[in-house]
Length: 416
Ligand code: EPU
Image (tube, rainbow, N blue to C red; front, side, top):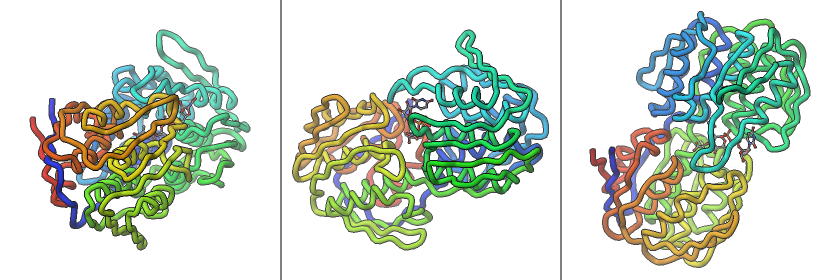
């Protein structure tokens, strides 16, 4: 199993280019089920989750080819309607094929994802919505089966805004009969990107990016040709990496407007950030000052940046309170950061982080994607060597992390 070895203490400097957004590319790939023919998606990051989705779509009978940031999906024929457990257990986003499969073929069988490292993560809101649209939902032997000759438009209220739930139902509604209204929908930029991709296929969608999305069903969609937005979480991860090392970096090919909550908080910590259209220049402080955060649905502070921000607060001047409101178990990095000398106490959804001047390198273990990113960030600032085990987690969501950080001067290498 690969490990990452980091010698801390180098101030990052130079330029880095951001890849396409994993969490936008995955639903757009699933959307290609809806447009029979050759679908071309560009600015797709080269990641393990992307190839898992590609293999799942190939399992459904689609052609899948990926090269140099482009994915081609041939969806003329859909031959299978099942997302097996083997795919869903390695990547929960596999559930994104549920809505498009029912809409296109009238039926889908998707393995019910179990709990995961960050929380229970049920998909009851996805199935509730499909049921409202007239699908018959049954659960048998760990699989959800959804069946509907033709989905009907419906008004669907989410008690919790759910990102992939909104995406699944938005895709299902594009081919439904009549109008679907999604109330209290997720407003994340990835939802907007999916809506734009669907609109380019001929879908009639209004209001994406607000909590009220209206979709008028159409009789058919054409294949897509679409470019994915930059990854705001990769961008945020590099912002915190520059800040924790007191470095100065230029982040290219990003979308600063998608990172406003983080950028505002980072400025409060003393990090200087200037934003132009697709570029950010970040200059870290000598020592960051402590700031409290509470994770919230977009446009609030993203849960996917909580762990990385905590690593920064571990060396801040002062005490910060970090409250995780989205997932009930997203503090797995705390125990690992403590092994590096961080002073963190967790009570319920809140972690109290007492900043310490220096962290010390240690062997640590990645437990999920963003937790591993936080260990990399801590390792960049720590004295001595940090060895991160189970880096397959980080490979799910960060393209060439060691090359990109290495290009900024970090002493980081992969040990196979
Ligand atoms: N929820 C329910 N029922 C549902 C769906 C969600 O109770 O049917 C709850 C969840 O348990 C959670 C909250 O609603 O407490 C929000 O979860 P959401 O459904 O929005 O999360 P998701 O769609 O499963 C996506 C991202 C995650 C990101 C979250 C929150 C993708 C593929 N995944 O997950 O990304 O953390 O939104 O922004 O888009 C990551 O990239 O590391 C990652 C975990």
